Amino acid sequence: MTQVVDVTTTQFADQKPGTSGLRKQVSVFQQAHYLENFVQSTFNVIGGGQGKTLVLGGDGRFYNRAAAQTIIHMAAANGFARVIVGQGGILSTPAASAVIRARGADGGLILSASHNPGGPNGDFGIKFNGANGGPAVESMTNAIFEETKVLQRYRTLQGAGETDLDILGETSLAGTVIEVLDPVAIYADLMEVLFDFEAIKELLTNPRFQLRFDAMHAVTGPYAREILVNRLGAPETTLMNAEPKEDFGGEHPDPNLVHAKDLVDLLNGDEMIAFGAASDGDGDRNMVLGTGFYINPCDSLAVLTANAHLVPGYSGGLAGVARSLPTSRAVDRVAANLDIEFFETPTGWKFFGNLMDAGRITLCGEESFGTGSSHIREKDGLWAVLFWLNLIAVRAQPARSIVRDHWERFGRDFFSRHDYEGIDSDQANALMQALTSRLDSLPGQTFGDLVVASADDFSYRDPVDDSESYNQGVRIVFENDARIVVRLSGTGTSGATLRVYYDQHERDPAYFSVYAQRYLEPLFAASEAILNIQYFTGRDAPDVIT
Image 1 (cartoon, rainbow, N blue to C red):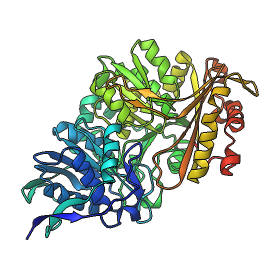
Image 2 (image 1 turned 30 degrees about the vertical axis):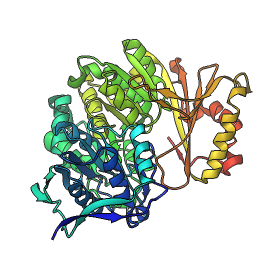
Image 3 (image 1 turned 180 degrees about the vertical axis):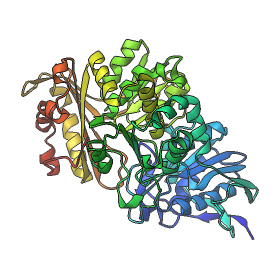
Image 4 (image 1 turned 45 degrees about the vertical axis):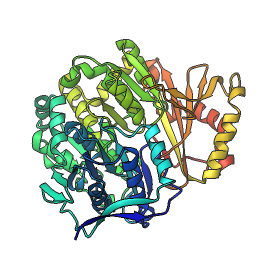
């Protein structure tokens, strides 16, 4: 017989969410009570589940199905009126946001570690998104963490069988309606409203235009098949690695130049592929490529902003635009040209949510391959791809030419990010402490031909709710307006990842074709002199350069 039970538990000290939820190795989540503690703490912080609607789904990585069953039992025991779960336990992060908003849900639990590796020895993650469809704000994630430190018991069902997640429709579990829905339909319908599908279809069915989309054996495979192939008429050969796998085929589902190398090689090869794109584990990131041409995410946000009027969903104009601190300042120049509001925020999509809810911004983006708009409250990989396809179709230009035209108009913002992964946490913290202790003395110092103009530790006051966030990254600006940003990432599950970002604006077209790593060499040298990365970490080169 099924009955509600309260299970006595002990606390875990490591359940503080990062920039986008709680991410740990699968083995950590598989510990007795670990997942349950975090879920119950979340339910407690939102005021319990009585009468509420919860959306549930994830990226299909290993442990996704087991976690979904656990959460369904707990939601029913906590009195939720309805749990809306994607078929097979699947919902891309953008689709989950769309479903929360379309169905008027009270929030959702998204099961994903985003671009981190999957499989039994990989990573898992969970985060709560609020009724607006966006990630929980910092005050809520802090409250959840505090609750995990005092939680005594969690509530679940005893004697309940598993819900069949593969059959669409509704069932009842201890008085809670469990609704299994098509994970793609609501999201795909929304895309059809925003973009000119007729123009894109004409482009994709032209044999002279070849597209490749790499789903990286992650969640966007079914979404890309429904939208690009079924609705827009692209051939099946458009899709690469379109079948989702629990371990992402043993690969790293991070759409960058290193982990999406097969796609990059295609765009630089002899097949004359006109446009290439990839998305990540949970579908919220994107990488876009023209023929022989990598489009930096910072440039992508700027180009989309400058051309938004050509897309049906944004033809009425933009309220404003925002970017994260490390993202290059390319979009700043577009915002000034359009005379719209501009915001610089800390890293983390939750900071954009308040601005969107208040009607202050329409588009936003991060250098970490994330771009999005107010259609949902998450970054959105396929949305960005469709936006680019819409522009290519309407402007009748290849992607490379669109970017070059943009540089001619606004100048080029050279940008690069250097990642030092898996650093000992004590070493990483020592480096950051040494850096912050020198910030007041850096202005006026010379490094090669570069003179420091200013240096600070970025803080942010939310213009909507006046909340403040401190220590969000060190920024060093030089007199020629070149910039270095340094921060420790919150998306890894072991050790620390040091990210160093470099950007510099160039107006002279004679330099536009220079390789970014070469153009930015003076900044790299200044960075090593200022940060002493090799001294603190023993690393003489970054693990990933983008």
